Length: 203
Ligand code: MG
Image (cartoon, rainbow, N blue to C red; front, top):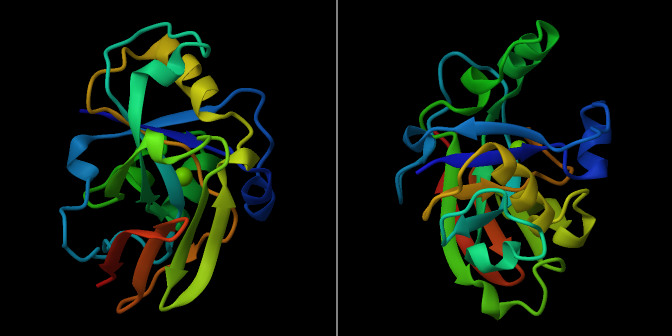
């Protein structure tokens, strides 16, 4: 199983990090070892003093495919989820400045929260899904998939040019604005519309 992540897919988030708007999707991978085990807290790693939460809509691949046309992309997934792309922002910043890959900042153990899954058929359109993240009971991130620069089906077309998609692979589709540092004892709760998709404690 592999996790394919999209960066800079929401304009407001690009602005908050003062990044350039990309001409093509920004893509990186997380290994299966980055998935935070169910019901486990997230431990802030000792190599960072600035780990940020990035709440993201997830797509689980249900069929093997390569060079998938966006017209047929909807046939390759039937579940939608919610997760967090934890990011060691301080480390990512220094890697970015040197033009180096981001993996140490984004692919470490526990850096991928994968919550519950909902059938795609629950949604009238995957391009109009509201999702949010609460920290200690306060809304901190809020998004709607209609605001993605590249929509889910376009992302599947794009990433499948480079990687064969296999059953069980997960796509993290990018975060809206509101990313911020997590601290010990924070409680994070992710929602798709009114469904609680995950809840976890920071240690
Ligand atoms: Mg992200």
